[in-house]
Length: 474
Ligand code: PNW
Image (cartoon, rainbow, N blue to C red; front, side, top):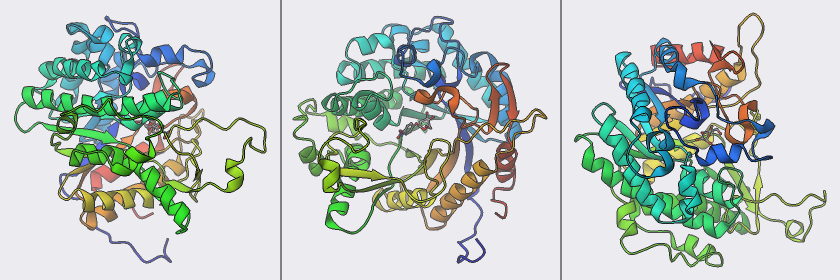
């Protein structure tokens, strides 16, 4: 580190939001309590072979019963904000009809607990737990689901809008559409790239309709946002084939969201690249006006960059040499594209650590969406479980990961990227989707047998960053 030119060192701006993030299905448990009905993740996790070790979110980190203790942990960390999601089937069982008061009561108590400790709630309406009944009626592949979402948004806003100042419609619609309906790695587990593109559009429509509802019902000044897992796409080389692969994946990861939301149109090249899968007739007159309603900020989740190249002729030639069937791709229309790991150490997810990707993304957004406030709504890493019998949990790799990424944020801020805050993923070890409890992203260790919480060394490190508003010397 000493040998490198020293980066611009400036503390984070005053008022910088220091947060941590979670999602309902990953931490709450209480899957069948107080009127909650199953979501697609309950169904999916009960389907053999979909989630590692057959894990489910039935109990998870039992946050539904332990939220007071968890908010106390947040206060000990010095968090100024907490990003969490609402469980749609808890608030509106079955995804239709009136609100379930008992479900809303839980979030009401949680919000009050947070505010009582000076922590600002940042609410995500949809972090992947679609009511199963709506999936049975077609899920995100049908247009009606977007209207159902707007109705659900109204129920949540009416109950919590007087105290929640920041709302996010969707978390990572890329995952909902392309992992949920494309390769089926996530719920509902469908494998149909044309359906994934329809789902993509209806998710964006839900964002637009939901934004309208929130604007209508929430007090003036309430912030409405959307969180995307944009990709820091890099071509392997400057060879024309590699550059074209990067253009195509940039289209399917980034511009397929940014263009409709911020410019009111779908990118022509993406429409052309996917024309053999769908004619996009699910896009109706007026949809793009709905989708491009102004938002107050953009949330970005970042973990690792995406390196792409043109496939080598051998890759296209038929069965793989190792005899295994090629894995299904989440990407519609990625024929002829190879995905390569970036350089760098790997986390327990096998995701290479590369903080420059976050810097590149923030600088790009600074340039392409001038003036739009940005929030890093997720960033963090899974590592092995280092808990030891003495109770200490040392996680030096996580500290190094966070240090590098916060430094990337700081560099981008110093160069004018309007980043207003950072939410670490995650507060607690939790249900890591298809990986179940086998991957731990928390800065607080959870013993899933006893539900005992133990702050890891990274939690103390983060608390110190928050306290000083600066990074310690590496
Ligand atoms: C995000 N991928 O998920 C989610 O928002 C979190 O709920 C999750 O726990 C976190 O990142 C860590 O995984 C992703 O395969 C899951 O590209 C999978 C992918 C991306 C994001």
